[in-house]
Image 1 (cartoon, rainbow, N blue to C red):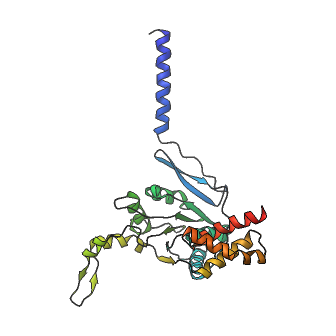
Image 2 (image 1 turned 135 degrees about the vertical axis):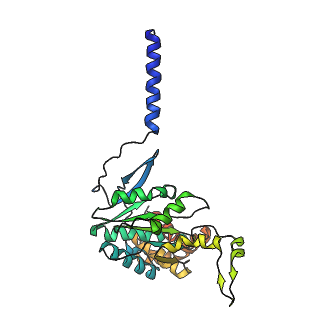
Image 3 (image 1 turned 90 degrees about the vertical axis):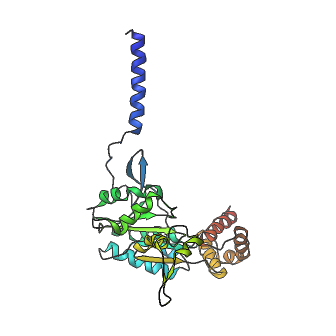
Length: 290
């Protein structure tokens, strides 16, 4: 073999090793638990790791308006959890932009100094839930695994993994982990007219769901606490907009003068949600103080 051929061989070998390193499992990196109070599960190839979130949205429970009952339910359940008392996995469902995700973030800010931690997991990575639970088992902190905007199509593997993590494994659930999920779908799967055909009638007129319907509701039933959110009325929307305008430094007179603009903004967006109110307030306050 000539020197030229040897050089070519070494270059090809180095290129092959580089490609192999990219696809082979990486050694697990140590988790810096002091780096933050929230983490994201991130995948590289087949290996996953917890990455700290450096900046947390500073939203407080008091910032969330017109969802008093929902706040009380989530806050109480989370308080039980951080105190080491029995608490439930939670499914938050309902209208978009009504504060479902914000409520969970606000709970983190409320209880992080009592040991609460948040792990955000994408739907596509739910198959790794068992690995995530193993990573945090035995830690002194209390971990909420957070799945935002969760919904499934039939046959997705994350669906089964979540069912197992909630209630279906031979292993006992770790007492320092709960799952909080938000969704616009109550049963997390698409519901079709054809599903109604699987219902049967009993002798006394009782209505019994068929296997298709049973399968679709079996996942949501594994959440011990269901919390529902509803569209805001006009007055509710205006109160939320007023709160955020004040938060961004507007005077009471400026807040009152902005009512018409707030309604026009909602009309253009086709929604009177809390998210729309917050977006209006940011735009309006920015223009006033610009």
